[in-house]
Structures are given as structure tokens and as C-alpha cells.
Amino acid sequence: MKKATIYHNPKCSKSRGALAMLEEKGYETEVVLYLETPPTAEMLKQLLTEMDMSARELLRTNEDPYKALNLTNSELTESQLIQAMVENPILINRPIVKTQQGTKLGRPLENIACILD
Image 1 (tube, one colour):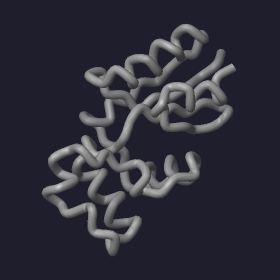
Image 2 (cartoon, rainbow, N blue to C red):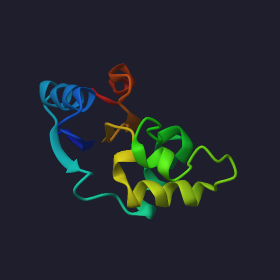
Image 3 (cartoon, rainbow, N blue to C red):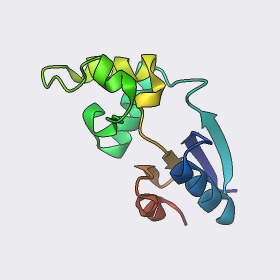
């Protein structure tokens, strides 16, 4: 059985679209409602490594906490940005999809096609 994990926000159309793609392709999918159960800093670091992304690249810049926490500050470290996302999971861009073939940010949704078989 093909397995996948999706870090999902059901209010997000991209996230719903990614979940639908996984279901269409027959994946047994673990759905992580990351707003309710945010990833730990270690898990977020692992996901970023797997996606070959920086914390800044994963940040949602149009959310209120982004401005309130002054995350535009270029002197903030990777660890500080990760901690901001752990404490304010709305800042994590979505959906993140993980399969045996890799981990990708599904924005745009076409990004995840390469990790689905």
C-alpha cells in the first residue's frame, strides 16, 4: 500500500486539492491537522531538510503574526524562524506532502506530482 503524510489545513483550497490528489492515486494518507497539532521544531527542521528549503521560504508572509513578530527582519536565524512557526503554525505554508519518494510543498499543486506514482 502506498502511504503519504499531508500537513493539512482543511480551509485551504490547495491543501484540499493535494489531499484529493493523494486519494485519487490510492494513497493511504495520514492527515496531520498542523494548526491543531503543530510540528515540533525538530520535525519542522527535518521537513525543511527533506524539501531542501529554508525556514524563510516556508513562511506565510501574509498572516498577522508575520508582521506582529517582525519576521521581515533579515537578521533572524533559521532557529528563530522555525520557533515562530512552531508557536504560530498559521505561519507554515501548506500543504506539505511526504511520500516514500520525497517531501514537497504543494504550492503550486504541481510540485507534488513528482513524488506521487
